[in-house]
Image: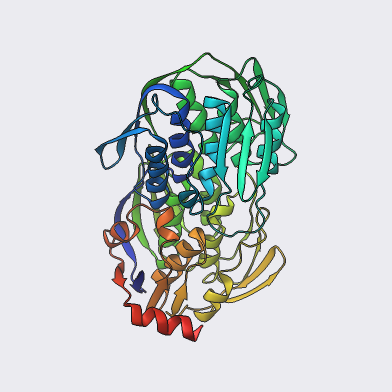
Length: 432
């Protein structure tokens, strides 16, 4: 077991290179199951969710060959297995994409219910509704999802999403690419990683139109062929480092981004008094003076992303005045607040609303990450805090950030990974 140890209060200066998007990679890798050929996928982030995804593909029988640390070749032509091992699925939320991919490939899928971060009730009802509209029979029994469309195959249909769902949009898209006829997804999610999955599938021979709008049309094709595809930069990783600079101060050039994807984050940071300069694929973040209060409401893209809410709340803890945060997506997103209070933050939560009263400074404290983005927010707070912050349960953070400590050390942060002896773990568990 490991923890992060941060000696805060140091402004950040230098450059950070952004990795491939976690939320795109964990869908595109399962989508390789649909391809009748070899996929070469580039700009893959080195994160634990990607490691698990590749492990699952290998266990299903795929040929997976690493070309370099960010490029793999995947050959799924010889897979005959539609049953996914239980253990890796329990460790990541995105394992549900295997249902759509296997259903599209074989007309059958048996996948364990997904795990991942506990952000509240996250049923897969919309996914199931979409699969059933395409002609599959779906049952959830004993913690497994059983989907079967072998009798008549999958056929195109109109699927209306009762609420905007990134996961369901992408899952139905994967199931539909090899189905007979036209599938129309209405009230579809518009996030950048939805578009990236569509672009990947199209580059392999799929016929998908409208990704990035609220109506996506998928005309089924006979088969997909191999090819090469590069994953987009990670919007949330870039936003997290922008928040790090906003909280700690400094001047950092964040490289390999799509500035348009960051517009909603940039707008809030500018409101808070942070200077943002865009230059092609790079964005410079400068914070010289104190932060100003603002209000944030999370919404589906192009609104402010829920995955950036904890990191921005960390910044608001240090802003002058009182800020309001309205979490419009998940009901369990504020579990990190008690940890922030250990650092001296003044936050009151009522349902989906958090009232953040800015303080002069935060003080380092021992913290426990409770999910991926909450853990990242604790890093943001620790970089700005006076004294030493220790963050445990960092496996949550490493689900979504490629070399976080190395990138922050490169801009002058005093952060390191420390091995936690078993005796210390036992003491902590007895204490709390």
